[in-house]
Length: 161
Length: 294
Image (cartoon, rainbow over all chains, first blue to last red; front, side, top):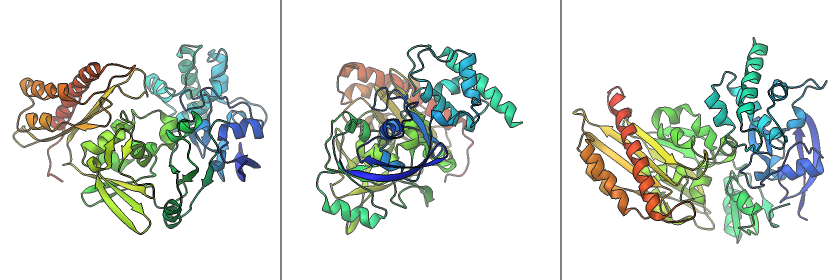
């Protein structure tokens, strides 16, 4: 072990932990913090299941070392719903539009779309497809995911009024 | 846990970084990590030490310096993609960047990392060669500047020494406005291209091609300029015969065959993406408002 202690903020809460320097951020979230909502598929940056937000930007947590997140604000799928359990508009829309079947890709899809819709709350369908091009889903054929993203975008625009 | 064991250092100044690199053997620089981390996770590489340069100040940023656009090596690809200076002065950069991986990888991946990794199909080395970019390199006790052509030595091999770090990339500006296009064919969005074509083109007042640069990526072991095709187009109006002559030089491209396609297939795809890039660049040059050259 070549362990370092790290301090970061995860879903708004300060976290202190220890990680071997070769531990990925994904493994640190899942194993040390027991935040298993972040999924690991390919572990080499292709499938997008492990997408989390680091300082607001969507990144693949399998391609970042935990020690690199020192001092960062990390947001995972567990931080999406409100403190009272109220679902994020994307979560509601994915439920309404059947945007998931097995659910393995869903955390990555949602975290990617959180960043995208914050930046572009009125996207064209093609822009949504481009935004999620780095997230692989083997169940839905993407149609219901795009429909859910469009519904969530409308809800986010409504709330901003 | 996927990567092999390694030690990890995170210098927080350029001086510390350079002295660290001078001291260490079998060290690997970690920039955005979007190629190195997969290679570590797949255990293709076994460095003794990772030197993380993410917290070295002064390595990121985009600015105009005279008639050049200078981009710090640690500038994230997504930052260049959305940068107003890059869009105004070197629009082929954002156009090419939209084809680099995906949003999540561009949020971490850097321009310097892409150039140093030098994947044959990567877009940024192709643009650097196309634009006659120069790279700034630092080591303890000195700096040097190389042209992209000098920097690119061979398949995934650069002129960067073990004790050196790429600090910035500098693009000489073309007349503003100019025609440009980056086209590629990949099996899926975000995949490495089977062939890509990049073109910069400026028209003279008489509507003839005054200056043109062409580079092809993904076909051979390194990106390739096409000087013969450039010469075939210079001075013409881009008539079909001139374009056909230029495209003919695709047959002479250095090409590799693999399970994505044979060498001949790659040359054939290069011909189609180059046809599209030339057409787009010419149309954009023609549509651009004429103004004083900058």
